Length: 393
Figure 1 (cartoon, helix red, strand yellow):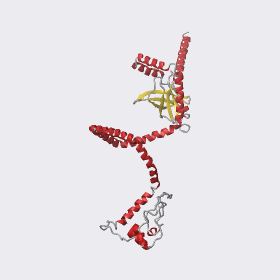
Figure 2 (cartoon, rainbow, N blue to C red; figure 1 turned 30 degrees about the vertical axis):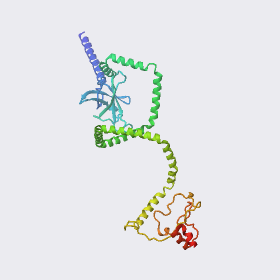
Figure 3 (cartoon, rainbow, N blue to C red; figure 1 turned 180 degrees about the vertical axis):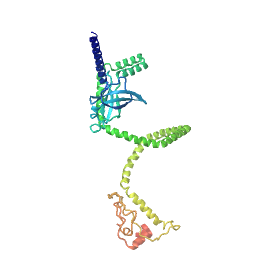
Figure 4 (cartoon, rainbow, N blue to C red; figure 1 turned 60 degrees about the vertical axis):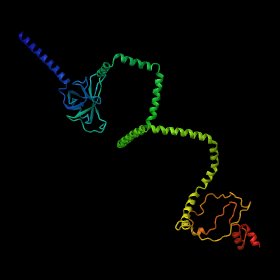
């Protein structure tokens, strides 16, 4: 009887030990004690409130390891990962990490992703001891609520209520107008989008403009200082400035009265000057020729009239008198239509000087005179109108 009891006791103890070993093995298997892994470290600014040891590590949605440690060091967090050796060949070296929850309220896990620069091009696999930077850490709902609570603690509920009531009153029954405003803004942005490249170029050029202003800043400051001195001078001379403005005001009044009285005469004068101005405008090309010719003649005339010798130096001889004026044969005629011409001026050479003088349609012809004898020319020169009596005798 005792042997049977002892045997049953031993069997019970063995069963309990076997059950404990199975449970311990299951626990160790769950914790990855029997897995062959390599250590990898993720460095992040923070880990969040729901990141725990044992959290899964996923790559492309497939679990490839577990979180084995979370430690705070030098203002950042280092998360130790245990990557299964069976998955090492499928995980590339160029990685970034994201700490994200599966749902809004779930615990976080580590999501490994290929970096943009290494996507599809990396042939190296993840290595033992590799450090991975975390580029995104999702904000938990409880953390958002914590920040909201801090805001509500700082802002009085009555003020928040008044602000929300004012906003509600502002948008009440204005949905159509708000929708129209949104549509109009969308159209404006659509039209602005093609000009974004030009706007970016202008912004970059703005840096050059600002650099130019920076170089010119000392000169600008000096200019502003001079403006200050100028304003001080104006303040000191304000009495004289007042007198000047008063004199200008009186002058404007007198000018207005003069213009009012002389308006008809000024109008008539301008009307009469118009054709004269038009004529001068037409023949204005002759003026430089005339001035240049007079300058050349002046150099020649200096030898004869007081230029090199005092008095007048001439070679004088008696010439027949000009034909007297005869009416109506010598009435003036404005009939020349050739327009402006310099006729060789300002410089006339010897060959041009021997050319006959130009003939103008003016009603008179100095070369057309009746045939006379030398005796008649001498008598006309000496006796003028009595020449006929002398020669006739």
